[in-house]
Image (cartoon, rainbow, N blue to C red; front, side, top):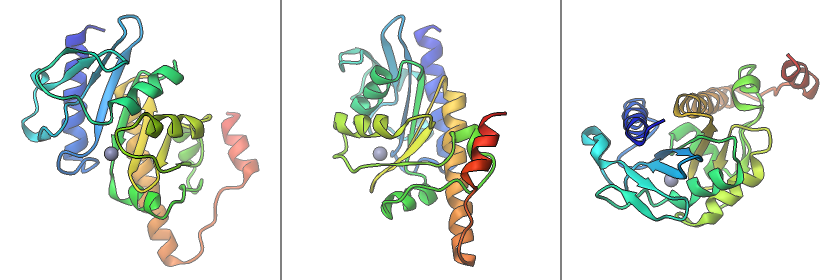
Length: 207
Ligand SMILES: [Zn+2]
C-alpha cells in the first residue's frame, strides 16, 4: 500500500468514525502500519475531523520520528506504536471514547460475552486494560497484555481500543464494542444479565 493510499484510508475512516459518534470533538485517533516500509500513518493531534484532509495526516516511524505532515501526531502515537511492535499481525488501530463502552471503562469493568456476534467479531468478551497516563507507552503495553485472542479492549477511565489487519476491520470491531456496551447497559437496566456459557463460546469459536 502506498503512503498516499494509507493517508486516504486514515482520513476516510476518521471522518466516518466521527460521523458515527465514535469520536467526539477531536478525541479518538486511528492509524495504519506497513511493516515493510516501517511507516505508521496516524491522525494529527487536535485537528477537527470535519475539515481534516489527507494533507493533515501524519507519517511516522514507530520511534516517533516524523517523516511527513504539518502537525503534531496524535498524542497517543506511543500506544499505537506499542501495538504494532508487540503484535505483528496488527495492521490498523482504532481508538475511540465511544460513550457506552467508555462508561464500562469508567466502572473499571470489561464487557462480558453477552451476544453471539461478540465471539466471531471480538474474540469473546471485551477485557479491561489497567489505567495508564495518556500519551505514555504504558497505555499500549497494558492493552497488549489483555489482548490475548481478543480484538479489542477497554482502557480504564479512558476509552476503547480496537485492532485489525486493516482499518475496515478495526473500525468494525470498534463499532461492535460500542454496540455490545449499549445493549449490555440497556439489559442491565432491565435486571440481571445472563452471559453466554463457556461451552457455548467454545463451540462458536470452533466453527
Ligand atoms: Zn483517548
